[in-house]
Length: 464
Image (cartoon, rainbow, N blue to C red):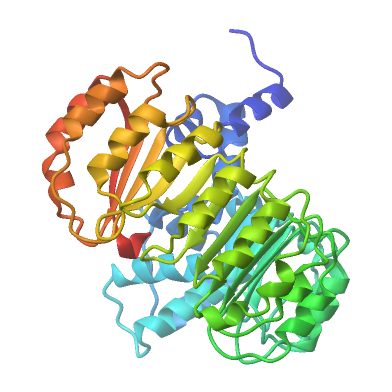
């Protein structure tokens, strides 16, 4: 048997990072395959199962195990053998929330005789495991801190290569100061706005050499956000603002390198400042998502006239559909390179739908509202079969109201006869996941076996 060089094998197995089943099989080939696979497997905290947390607990130092024992926390391990690897050292993507959640499931599975509540036990075990991670990790890439840690280890070299940080806005100045001293390569900063914005957050932003993505989620009135936005560098290529408050949109104009812009506001009034943004030029913009409330369509049309040419994805509208014929015609006119589109066509807008398909020849996916004031699903499907571009393959049908049973088989047969015919992804979003689409599963499975349907899903609106 010819043995591949270690570097080559490592590059090959990297392709299995998101394929846990096959990666697990690689663990059993030989020592070399096992050594490479285990590092990839333990890299991402999101891959860990309950059994992995049991293993990590066996890796705890004696003083941590003693703390657990003194608090009546005894977690059995299926094997008494010591760990083969120092698993915590391999972690590169760490979420404190994820650790706490999985540990709560683990502890809830055991009858623990203790004077502490389950939440106390979860907190104690989480704290000891986080200390293990922070003491053992060699180089961390992503860190999600949705719970404040007041014990950042003195030796912070493992944070030097951090590229993604998620945290709250109200952490103490000292917290951000420590991170700003060692972390200079953060490209994605994800902030959950709480109570106030710490002064140290500005220092952390200034310390970054190449910040690319800024995400902020706010659910209450908060002062200082506009000021913080003005401090962001114009190196940003992704900006995601989820706001329940007014923010000056004029601060966005300077980010001329933006490739993705997402604005999620709860009320139309928060878009008053869009009058300034409508004239902004973002020559590299490829993804536009304006969800929740919407600015006036007249302003949006002007924005698309200036920035629609390079758009690959466009999502405009709230949960229950926000459509305008002039806006749809503007998408057809100004967004010729669109690949993914979220849109609604009213009952009298069939010709507009045909125009969109004719002008957007690269369109691959459409999320479309149907029922009520919008076109019925049957008419939508017939139009897609006849007029959708040749690369089109995905329909996300958003049922706003009750929809009558669609002649799905007629549509599938028509799709099967399309030239060229691509396997179809079909997603139905509905208030009631127990609708007629589930009753048609036998029909769906028939066309999955025929290769007409690649993927079929029914989703509840709350899961959207």
